[in-house]
Structure formats: C-alpha cells, structure tokens
Image (tube, rainbow, N blue to C red; front, side, top):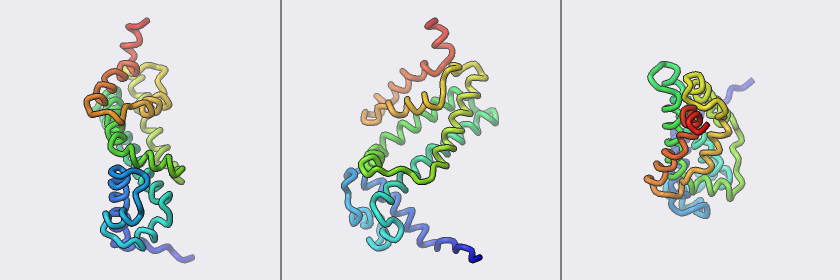
Length: 192
C-alpha cells in the first residue's frame, strides 16, 4: 500500500491564500465575483486556483467549511473555559453567540454565495463538533441553574438564523442584549 504524500508547503500556502482571497472578494463584490479576480487577489495564477478548486462551488464550499470550523473551535474553547472553571456557562454561551453573529455579519456575502451556488460542506464533522460543544455549554448552564431547562442546541441555531447580521454593530449588540434573557432560567421564572 502506498502512503499518500503530504501536500507541499507552497501548495498549502496557496490554498490558504486562495481561501482568504475568496472570502474577501465574495464579501466585497458578492457571489458573482469571478475566479480570475479571486486568483488575482490571492496572488496566484488562475490555473493554481483551479488545481485546488475545480469549480466555484468547490471553492465556496471550502470557504463555508472554514467558517464552520471556526465556529466549532470557538464553541469548544468556550466550553473548555467552563470545564476548567475560568468561565460561567451562560456567559460563555452568550459570548459565543455574540462572536458568531459578528463573524456572520462580516461573512454574510460568503454565506449568500454558498446559498446561491447550493453548496453544502461535504464533511459535517465541524458542524457536529460545534453542536456537541454548544450542547455541553447548555447542559453546564442548566446544571448551574442559569440556563432555562428547555433551551436546546436547535434554539441556539434558531437565534443564529434570526440575528440581524445586516445591521450595524450597535443593532447586533442590542439584539444580543434582548435575546439573552430568553435563555436564562431567572428571566423565565420572573414571567411565571
């Protein structure tokens, strides 16, 4: 059996440059930005771009996959702070929600391009990682008595989907201030 060779360092660098440029170009110019423009922004030849990403759908799927991986990394880091006692679950859950909303605000054109091109990440491992970490944060918050017992991962995803990512930062911050009490046990007890 032949072992696959690791990618060359220049190939790894080029792939990263292409992904960064694609995110920036799609955000700046929308989903119709051309592959030639993306290659130029990345400082690579168009052929190099196509060797890494044979179609624009492949490229956008990779950009979206990196975004999902960042969300998963953030959620896992938030839970790690709770697990080691340096953070409270509700605070970490709320802060993580805020960071995802802010990231989504800057990446909204990339997400729109993904939707327009029908891309779905082929590998759902990062999505699963994010879900597990958010579930762990919710359970920890519920154990602390801070997060309402009926809050689920799907509720957090619903909040993500309703976030005002097309609004200015002050509006996004206000949205977070308004939705946070809905997650808490104390606010719901006061309503009873």
